[in-house]
Length: 158
Image (cartoon, rainbow, N blue to C red):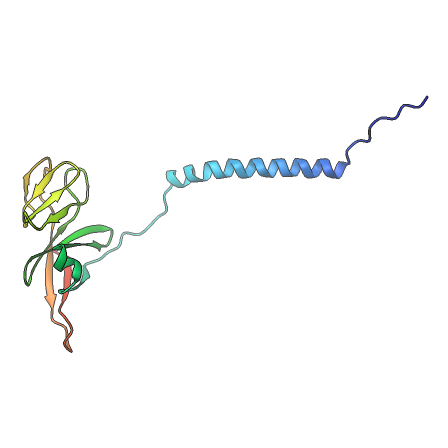
């Protein structure tokens, strides 16, 4: 009596399954480690050396309605406030307590930090709450435009 055993899987199929499992495992390991490696070594980005920023026209709807606008001065946020008809104030928009972004409360004529209730006046001095230092001031210039265009607001380092 002859005893026949089941045919063995082909060597090619076994190699393919091994390759498939190995590649899948490597991809899984890479997808788990890549974010960790990127976090540990952030990319080198040169600091923007900005001396002045064009903040927009004096009749910007956001400045008229809300009374303020957040602009970017390089990597730093700056709050541009319409203090009067043609008077603008620019200060660092980062609260000196815990680096939250401040906002201008038009009805109370103050700068307010929602994180912990810090209050600043329009010159950037800390009036109440936990902020330890005043906001950094920026220089604001209004440059007249030609051809009937509205004047432009330029913010620069003080």
